[in-house]
Every structure is written in structure tokens, then in C-alpha cells.
Image 1 (cartoon, rainbow, N blue to C red):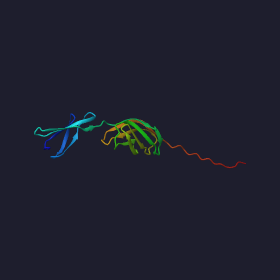
Image 2: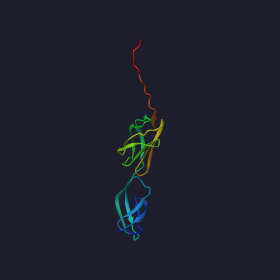
Image 3: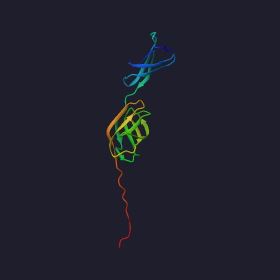
Image 4: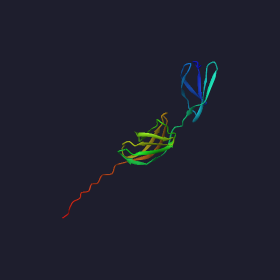
Length: 157
């Protein structure tokens, strides 16, 4: 029962309508408070329909800690990152280099494998599937691999 010219609000925010058919509406949500929001469609003839709690706004991720806090420049260290608002589809980078094997354990914890990177201390970025970013500056240190030491055994005279 949607009609061309219908408007949509999610919570109290307008949703910019891009297409309308009799059975569906596509729109881009505006900013709002986090949490479940009602979706209301109003046709130009003033008929209104509301679905309670039909859309969830999610806050941007936050990053509060990483463990361990260092690994070698070769990468390959599995790290656990803690924070908030971690969801499937999140990506992680350390110093601008992408981690691999990102696994969201819960909304407050994820794991990944560090990339190879030049020595130094770098920040961590967690980017949600929704494009929002949480950052923790100077949180992980890439260290040069220790030199290997060989021993020669022999006989002495």
C-alpha cells in the first residue's frame, strides 16, 4: 500500500527515500540514538503505518585494549582486542595494515592475526560492517626479530 511520495522516519530521524513501490521502500537512514527504533511510513494521503522496534542503530565500535601488546615484524601473532560494538563483518588494521582471520567472539571481543609490518608502535582500527571506526592509538608494537645465535662445538687442544 505504499504510494510514490511516501516519507519514512526511523525513530525521530528522517530516512531519505530513494525508491518506492507498492510493496517496498528504499531509504538511507539519518543519524539517531543507538538502540531499537520504530519505523513509520506516511503516504501522501496521510495514511500511516508503524512497525515497533524494527530498526536498530548501532554505535561505532570502541577499542579499549589489545593482548598481547607486541609481536614481531613478521606478523602472525594472534591478538585479542577488547572494546564495544563488535559485529560480524568488522575488519581490523594495525598501523594501516590489515589483520587476517578476524573473528568476532562477542560484541566486546574479537581476535585476529597481525600482519607483517615495519618495527614501531602503531594504532589499532576496528571498522564495522557499517563503516564506522573505533581507534586505539599507540597500542601495538612491532619488534624486530631477535638475531639467531649459533653455537659451534668442537674439541680443543
